Image 1 (cartoon, helix red, strand yellow):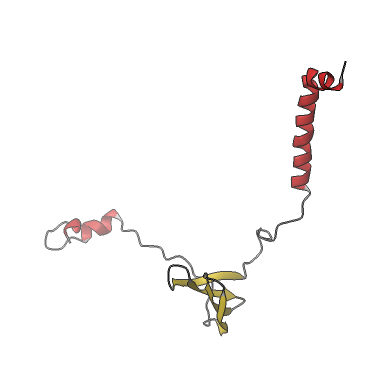
Image 2 (image 1 turned 30 degrees about the horizontal axis):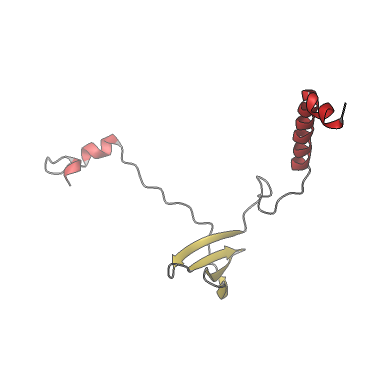
Length: 123
């Protein structure tokens, strides 16, 4: 009996080897150091975010970034990135911009919005 017939003759060895590989990958995934791109937890306040961005051409963009109440103007894309202006003080009382929600009209407001007998959709 040679070595290859022993290995290929026992499917339980292959099943055990697959289980061992899966357990090894699971151990590696759970014992690795934390990634710098993952937020530090639920209580962590973000310090860095994009305030505004504008396209210069098809490859380059100008981005206004706020960090710790200081804004920085950066041009990204193209052959290299350029810091255009730094340490721009953020406007007083400026917080993280909140998305603007559109007001929702209720059915009662739509009914009272008719003028001169025209439906609200005809405006």
